[in-house]
Length: 321
Ligand SMILES: Nc1ncnc2c1ncn2[C@@H]1O[C@H](COP(=O)(O)OP(=O)(O)O)[C@@H](O)[C@H]1O
Ligand SMILES: [Mg+2]
Image 1 (cartoon, helix red, strand yellow):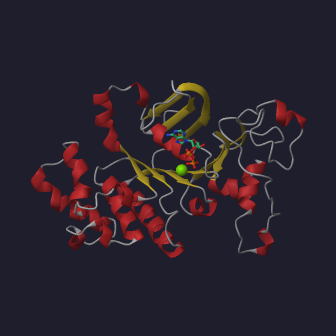
Image 2 (cartoon, rainbow, N blue to C red):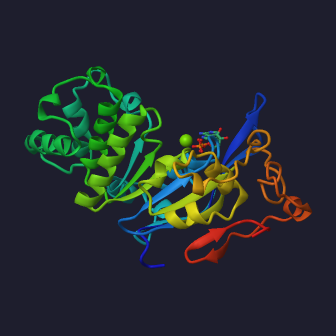
Image 3 (cartoon, protein in one colour):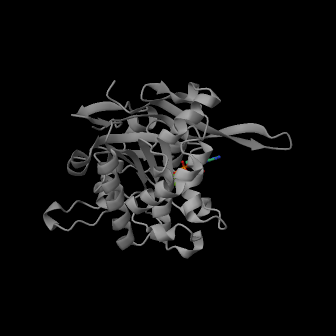
């Protein structure tokens, strides 16, 4: 698909498990195990799944903060993991990461205006004298005031810190942003403000997002398409409304059934999953979800289901569909 901004094909990221004095590799955590997804320019792709399903690892491997184990990541047709170090440094500003806790990445002794501007200097994207004016502009577009420029990180609330995190990423004029649980640590009322900010910035700056959350109700308002991950694998991807109205995978149905619905007519049967998410070091055979699936049959234990098309832009990996 040439229209894609980002194409991920059969991506795998395994972390070695080492043991003993010699640090011998005794196994692998299959954090990302054959994931494919496509993100088109201007769209927001939501990646959801329980904690530990590999969402952050997908994000970090796309940005090449992790080396891949196998597969391919193409950004605007360029194979990200094949770039030289210099080429990668040139590409970096275009793909930015915003994470759950921006405070942890802010130096407590650096004024936030300088923190927002420092990457611009590092990448040689602006002359030193132009930075303060530009940073103030970016701060204002993120709902911060210019007079915050000289303040220190501890002087800000959680919501404002996330605005700083967004401003830092935005200062580099990226085209693509991966937001990894950016509102998960915030109060619900503040979550809505930050989500509105993401939306506003998308419209004014023409951004494309990969929005990661363990909470389907958070991605619902923001995303055009949604992918549901479980234990390193993609279970289902579909346009947002299609996924909410016609979920096909039992895991998606279970996640959806946990969201309270305001309209009783839409009330879904509550599906409670058995047990905990298994270890990605030793995932179940066949369909990885079969140990928790209320509908599993013998085939699910033996054969890995193919990720196949089940509707317009709708893909699912399930034997029962
Ligand atoms: N740097 C790492 N080294 C070893 N294992 C890791 C590393 N990062 C993540 N993992 C493991 O990979 C799996 C997926 O983690 P993660 O991508 O953080 O999931 P999620 O973001 O969906 O919660 C987990 O089992 C986690 O423990
Ligand atoms: Mg995560």
